[in-house]
Image 1 (tube, helix red, strand yellow):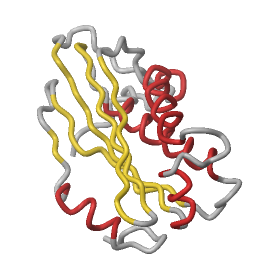
Image 2: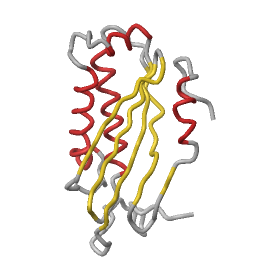
Image 3: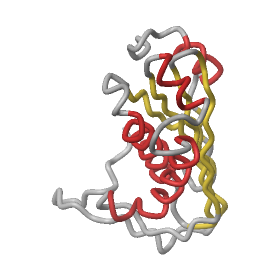
Length: 176
């Protein structure tokens, strides 16, 4: 089992020293879902939510969140990101899929930035629509893939089934 790198030999918290790591292109993709009543999704689709275009506001919130990740997660490194993208897909009558892709040429990965982008985009959707649907749910939020660095390429198994699992779920997260 790998060691937890954010603790020293005495158990004290620490930021990992990445100064000796090679600068490489690193990328991470994360996904998350927001489920809501079909009428709420229709308001979003038709741009009829009183606060504005939900997808565009949530996209900007997610991108902005990538740049602030180190301020939110105590032991994350501050990174000068190369790119951040947040995309939305309506999966079925009550589900939105959010996917974030983040890239950097750096000494550490951008998994936390991608996960933060998805989380903040989902929270923004909730905030913009809560007046009409307080029963919305968020999740699961997962890392799909990461590339670059010593740990190599990670791909979550079952990505192909990700849309199907959420589409068949009636306001409850998929089991297993």
